[in-house]
Amino acid sequence: MVLVYIDHANGKIKKSSLEAATYGVQLASKMGTSACAVALGTIENVSKLGEYGITKVLHCTDARFDSFDARPIAKAVSEAAISIGANVVVMSFNQNGKALGPRLSVRLKAGIIPGASSMVDVSNGFKAKKNVFSGKAIADCEILTSTKIVSISPNTIPVAIVGGTCTVDAFNPSLTDADFAIKVRGVEMVKGDIPLFEADLVVSAGRSLKGPENWGMIEECAKILGAATACSRAVADVHWRPHHEHVGQTGLAISPNLYIAVGISGAIQHLAGVSSSKTIVVINTDPEAPFFKAADYGVIGDAMEVVPKLNIALKKLKAG
Amino acid sequence: MELKEQAGAGAVTVINVGPADNEQIIRKALAVGADDAVRINAGEDVEPFFVASQIANYAKGKGYDIIFTGKETISYNSFAVGGMLAELLDLPFVSQATKIDMEGSKGVVHREIEGGEEVLEVALPFLIAAQKGMAEQRIPNMKGIMSARTKSLEVVEAIAVDTYSKIAHYEMPPAKSACKMIGADDMDMLVDLLHNEAKVI
Ligand SMILES: Cc1cc2nc3c(=O)[nH]c(=O)nc-3n(C[C@H](O)[C@H](O)[C@H](O)COP(=O)(O)OP(=O)(O)OC[C@H]3O[C@@H](n4cnc5c(N)ncnc54)[C@H](O)[C@@H]3O)c2cc1C
Image (tube, rainbow over all chains, first blue to last red; front, side, top):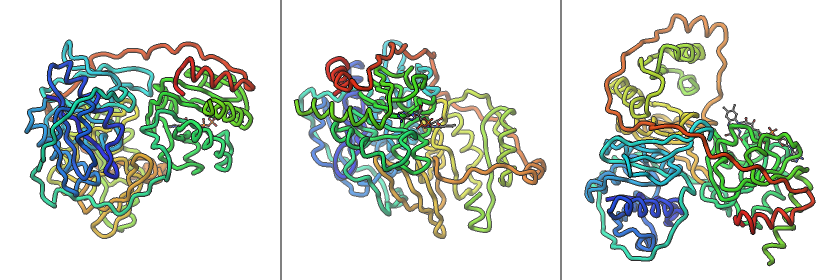
C-alpha cells in the first residue's frame, strides 16, 4: 500500500500535494497496489482526491493540525502508515515536506529519497533519481529498508485527473497537547502573488536591473503570463526583492515549465536551483554570459529595451 | 555565539561527524568563540541517517537547550540531518529558520514558507535548521586562533548504524541542445517559439 501525505494552506490542498497524489497513484499501480492519503487539519473537499486515483483518505479534522508542526505530524502520519500497512509514503519535497520527511524516516525506520526527480524504478530494488552537486550530476538513489519514503521535487510529474471516487475515513491519531509544541505568532505572505515553488512559469531578474524600481516590467511580464517572479541571490542580498524569491543553491530549487532569466549571469550556484526547468529563456547583454549554455532560447540585448518589447509581444499572443 | 552573548551566559559546543581533515574547520569554529568541540570519527561519504544517529548518540542526555544544524548540504541538498536528529531526540523542530530571538525560555523563530514567512514560538529545548539570515558570519582573529589551540576537541569513535539508503550510481545530466538565438527586436518570434515550439505558454 502507498500512503500520500497531503499538505495544505488555508484549508486548501497544495498543488504540490496533488503532484504527490498523482505520483503515489502511479507508483502504487507499478507495485500492483493502491494509494491512500492522509490529510490532517481543516481541509476543504478532501474527497476530491478520488479524482486523482486515491482510493481512501484518512482525514483527521483536528484544528491543531491547521498550522504545520513536523513533530505531531510525523507521529500522525506514521500512525496512519502503520494502520493501513503502507510500505511506501510519498510527499512533496516542499518546505513542509523537507521538515516532515526526515522525521518520518526515523519514526518508521524507513529510508528516504529527499527530492526525487523521477518515478521510482521498482524493477530491481527501489530506486529514483535526484539532482546532486548543483545540478552537475544525477544520483540514482536506492532505499534498502522495507518501508520507504519518497519526497518529490516540484514539477516532477504533471497532476493527472483519472476520475474515480474515494472513501473518507475519520482518523484520530493519539496525540496530546504536549505534542504540539510550536505556536504560530503570525504569518506574512506576499499578497496576490503566485507561489514561486508551485509556479509553472517564472520570470526572474538579476543585479543588472540596478534597483527595485526597475522591477515593474518584470512584474508586468509575470502578470501577463500568470507567472511567479524570482531573483538571483545578489538581488535578495541587497533587499531589492524578498529573500524567499531567491532561487539557487542557497535559495529555492524550482523546475517550472518556463524560466525567463533577465540580466542574470548564470553562476553555477544560481543554475543549481533552476537548471532542471523545462524551457529556459536568457536575456543578457553579454554573449559570453554562462547562462546561455543552459538556455533553450537566448536574446542578446539590454533588459530595459528587450523586456518591454517582450511584454508587448506577449500581450498580442494573449489577446489572440 | 550571538545568543550566548545576548544572554551573557551559557556555552557553545560544536560537533562534526567526519574525518580528521575536518578539524581545520572545527578549529575555526573554536576560533570565533565556541567553547569546546567534538568530532565523531567517520568517513566522508556517509548518509544523513548515519550523521544524525552519531550526533543524537552524543547529545542524548547532555541537556543542550538549542541544537542548530544547517538546513541542507550544498552537495546533496537533502535537508535530512536536522529533521532526523530532532526525531531521534524527540525535540520540536523548526526548519528553514532565518531568525531567532529569545524571550526568556521561549524562542521566537522566523521560518521561510512558500510565498512568505511565519513567526513561531517554541519553548526550550528545541532544534533549528538554520539558513541564511540567522546570524552574521564571523571571521577568526589572531587572539581567537591562539585561544582555539587550547580549547578541547574531543574525538569519539562512531557507533554502528543501520544503512537506510545508498547511491547506486551517478550519471551526467542529459546534454542540453544548443541555445537558439533570437534578435533583440524579434520578440514576436520568441513568443511564437515559446507558444508553438516549446509549447510552454
Ligand atoms: C556559497 C554560494 C552560494 C550561492 N548561492 C546562490 C544562489 O542560491 N542563487 C544565486 O542566484 N546566486 C548564488 N550565489 C551567488 C552567485 O555566485 C552569483 O554571484 C549571483 O547569482 C549573481 O547574481 P546576478 O546574476 O544577478 O548578478 P551578476 O553576476 O552581476 O550578473 C549580472 C548579469 O547581467 C548582465 N547584464 C548587465 N547589464 C545588463 C542589461 N542592461 N541587460 C541585460 N543583462 C545585463 C551581465 O552581463 C551579467 O551576466 C552563491 C554564491 C556562493 C559563493
